[in-house]
Picture (cartoon, rainbow, N blue to C red):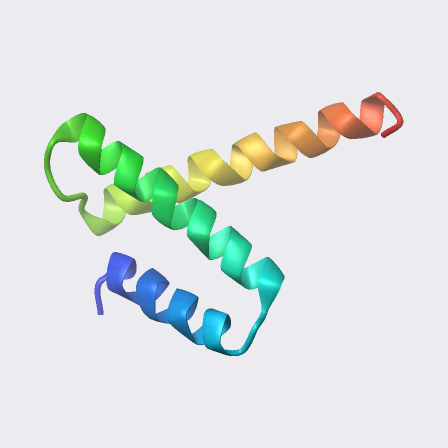
Length: 72
């Protein structure tokens, strides 16, 4: 199963199970992947999707570090 299809099915499953945190994370990933596809004007390969996911993880970790440093 392609990675993007797997994310979509996991999103639907989480939505039906009312898992709000998982739905929010998967929605964020779907949006980031879609934005990248629009930038490149073509579908992404699984490797490119993994790069998008890694970038999103790094952004979130950096945000956590910054908020921790600011005592928030």
